[in-house]
Length: 488
Image (cartoon, helix red, strand yellow):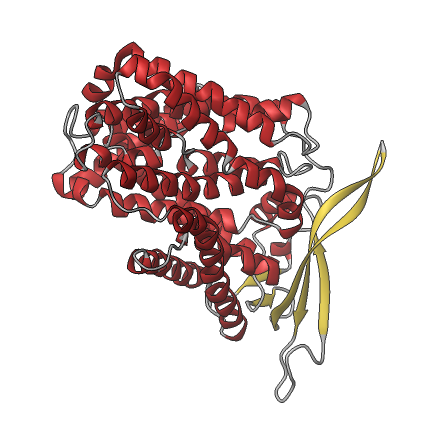
């Protein structure tokens, strides 16, 4: 397995670099590396690695959804709630309808088999979409109208909705007694329960971090552990109660961001570094699931079914964002962002074949082909369209992120030493503020980080006694000219 990890890291990073050099998303290169290194082409990956591939992919998905949670702001969610709910269901339903119309004719499937195929194709891939949306959010692109947040939230709920539809259809095909009302009712129940099981431990972690001064890496690892437990709870309870644990994973970051923004930013930066490795695992291993021969067998008829379904899906995506205050270019961006398929198709594409569905081989072939076609096309389309279309608000909250990276400031609770007199102080408060800077065009708003330092004295309570305040900007005096951060 060690050699397999080396293959994933070395070839994945090389492909990522090469594709970025030609202005294409690095994840496309990683998917190609996975296909070539997987068991269906050059077979460079150890069977033991493939056996635990699903667990590794889940861990990687947890990392990216945690990062997504730390980007979800309540005010933006309020603005995008209605179109997000519509996007989570309408495009998938219309794509299923489109596949039901065309698949029986082109692929010689029954309408029920076509419906099962449509429910597999109907899921957008958060593994592809979420990292790209977070990249835009990191740079403040689309912050003005909350478009990346809209797509990020909708794509996460979309998977819950589609998997429930798939489960219902597969059960009906097998002649099982299906309580349709309960199955459909389980969609909102699983969403609500998923959010609740994330908010509660998220709040407990927030209080814990306030009380105990844990280093950011320890906080990040603890949050990761809790998030993994949430997915275990979903597996444990799925026979009795449906729980969308991946929404709970996002809710952990959301509640910490709501309660302590500075803390959330620091943890998000640590997750960003962890994502470098998780991204390699996720996309290379997703690629390794793709059987080129199976996809080839689907042929032109398979491509036609996928294309026809995408047309219906695109109509649904466009209708879902009507009335959301977007111009036609922004609506088109939302349509393109809902094209990529990968995660769900790789996870459930083979289930109909294993369950004895007559058209199972054809369904698997189309599912694999959809990954090969839509994941790279969708990712490239998102990147190329997002740059010119998504607007950045002048006072974007996301402008503080690169500022933090550049200034390398201490966190709240950390001790610093004054370089002039050697006295030791403690950071007790941090804020993101806007200052005005005089330019040739007049005063311009610039982001700044406000820090308050406290000089501990014996017998004094935290914050009482001598404190000093400083604002740090990209153009002002450097923090490190006057202070040094002491080790934990």
